[in-house]
Length: 83
Image (cartoon, rainbow, N blue to C red; front, side, top):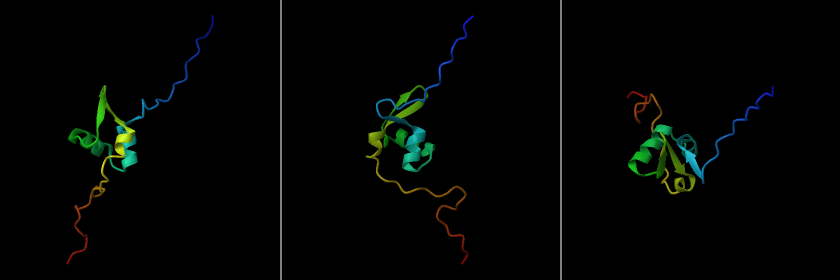
């Protein structure tokens, strides 16, 4: 009886230059949640595929540069120094 060969799991490649929210977040140096917020606000155009969003990599170049937000646990711009 011949054994069936298992197919190697192929890495998912971007579809026509489309990238995931995680890749976009890494590229923009922001969190995936922030990327999703930008998608919902209409700043970053994306297509919903199943439960995920796919973003055209070229459209990210058109998104204005954003200043990073405060680090988690910070007091939103307040100095730790007391007067």
